[in-house]
View 1: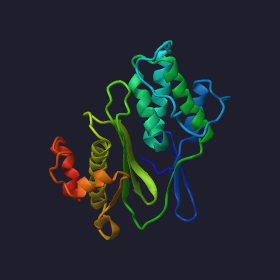
View 2 (view 1 turned 30 degrees about the vertical axis):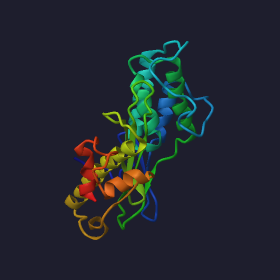
View 3 (view 1 turned 90 degrees about the vertical axis):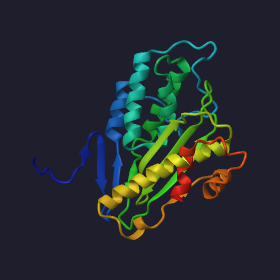
View 4 (view 1 turned 180 degrees about the horizontal axis):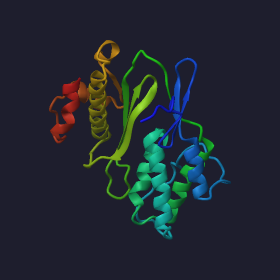
Length: 251
C-alpha cells in the first residue's frame, strides 16, 4: 500500500473539499463519458428526469421495438450514477429497469431523456457538512404505479449531516389496497434502513450525542402515521402482513 494523499477520485466518484469542512461528491466526468458513449453530446437540456405525463408499460400500441443492447447499456450506466451520487434519478431508473427484456421506442426515449437531464445537471452532487450528526429519513410511496401488474413503488432516503447516505426506489412485493397501506410499507422499509445506520454509527464510535436520540422519519400520509403510532386491529389494517408492523416496535 502507499499513501497517495487526500482522495480526489474514487471508482468514478469525484470528491471536492471546502475550507469550512464541506465535502462534495459528484460524477461529472463519468456523466460526460456516458453522454459521449451514446452520442448525446448535442442534446437539449431538460429540467426533470422524466415526463410525468407518460405512463410506461410493457405493452404499448403502435410501438416499435428498440435496440435492447443500447437500452441495456444506457440503463446500466444510469444505474451506476444512481447508486453513487444521484438519488434524484433513482425512481426514473427503477422504472426503466423493468423493460430490459423487451424495450420499446417510448422506453428508449425516456432513457435518453434522463441523459438530457444529467447533461444539464452534471455538476450536481451530494454535499456533507461537519458534525453535529443529524440522522433523519423521508419515505413516500406511489400507489399502484406499475401499469402492468399494479404494485406500488416505495421510495425512501436517509440523511446524515445534511446529505443523503442511503436511498432506494423499488416496487413493493405485494399488491396494496390503499394509499395508506402502500405508504405504511414504505415507512417500514425506511425504518429498517434507519435502524441499520444507527447500529453502524454506534459501531464506528458515534454512540453518544444525537445518535442516541430518536431519529426523525417523515411521511406525508396521515393514515400511515396514525397506524404506525397506534396499530389498532381495525378493519382497514387486518390484512396487512405482520412484518410491516415492524415500525410500531421501532417507535
